[in-house]
Length: 113
Image (cartoon, rainbow, N blue to C red; front, side):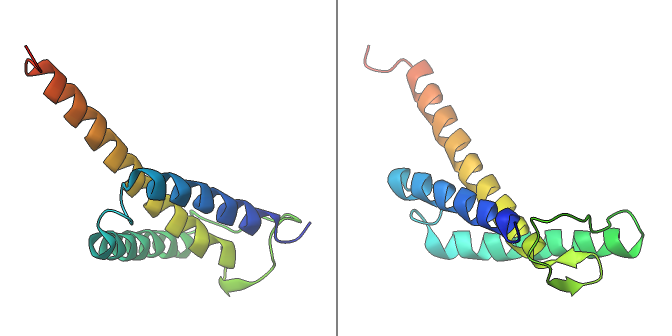
């Protein structure tokens, strides 16, 4: 089923975006900062992939779930979306952990005693 992998990436990104919008964690909290970090993280991971491909560490797998469009040898179009998803997920999870630690830190400071 061509496109299944890309569809899964888009669906997962939509889920993370829904959580982000609900609790204003990253993009809905600081859109400019999040955009800069998303772009920088995506570029870093893309460069990492390119080095991995050039050295023969990363190769394109085969399967019926890919769209079939390659940006470069061994770099399917789905990889661009996956790298963006991975970066966005990391930013959202960082914000979650930052809030949890902040709440726990405030609770351990004595709270309302």
